[in-house]
Length: 264
Ligand SMILES: [Zn+2]
Image 1 (spheres, rainbow, N blue to C red):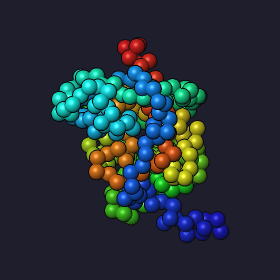
Image 2 (image 1 turned 90 degrees about the vertical axis):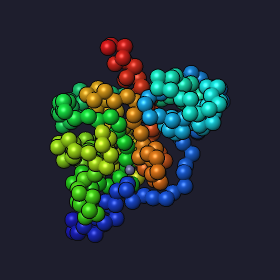
Image 3 (image 1 turned 60 degrees about the vertical axis):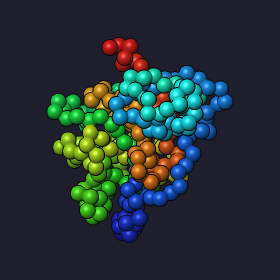
Image 4 (image 1 turned 135 degrees about the vertical axis):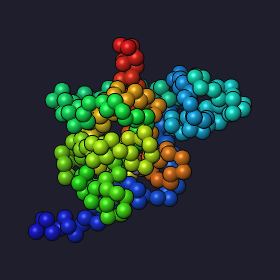
């Protein structure tokens, strides 16, 4: 009987983030956390970045970003230039370090991700939510196949305790075969949940941090290259949801990359 109910609910459960469209832009999370006094965090400009993109990435206003850096002409931005990001550091410091995953779980994630693939180039990571309360890699694969997307459109799916364990990392066939989804060099990670309504669980967050740190180390991806689906230019979506703890995640990843750089 339970099985029948699941079947009936399936179409509603597995719609996935690609269907969330055309919501008005939302205020970035940093806006709520940003204290009045500006503080010092610097961003080093990478190739192809603009004021607009950098401002969006940190949830700050592009004009404010230009103002605090005394820039009048945005076209003068140069690779390697250091930009002061206003008002972000105190909000990052609000977050205490997350409890690291037990070594057993970290080892399992490492095992599932596998060793670095020498011939693969991965440069960015895009974060999604499923926009459903339940799901798994298998269910999304079925749904994405039905929608003519060629099967599961994510490289990794992080469970929320409905169809797989809370925080369980499932590896999609695209990762196993080292195949892109829609953009080259872009790793797609989906957390099961509707984070416009729900919260990312601590187990999911800890697994996400572990997974991204591993991928960052293997493929030399900087924290600046981690983005939300909605940050991609031209995407009208709220994915991965208003409650997604993006700045808490960034603060974890920056902590990690600072440590790595110190050891390097
Ligand atoms: Zn998405």
